[in-house]
Amino acid sequence: MTVAQYAAKVKELSRYALTTISTEDDKARKFEWGLTSSRKAVVGLEFPTYSQVVKCALRLEREDMDFKAKWKKT
Image 1 (cartoon, rainbow, N blue to C red):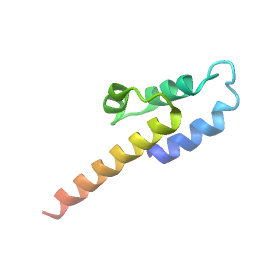
Image 2: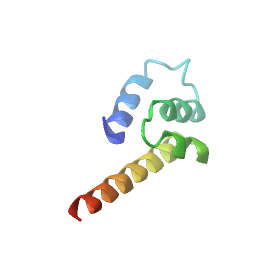
Image 3: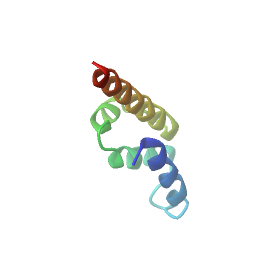
């Protein structure tokens, strides 16, 4: 699942978890725990809002895909 797909799923499901995910910080931390490859990098930066965490994860995913594509060509 891509970060964008995961973010869409979190957005869809978070409306059912209003008591568990009551603040932006809670939502950001829950999102971080679901990340796979970029989790350590995102968690270490401690972004305070969900949107910042998503932007960072998307950027890391894009850089990783660009890096892999570049090395496949050579």
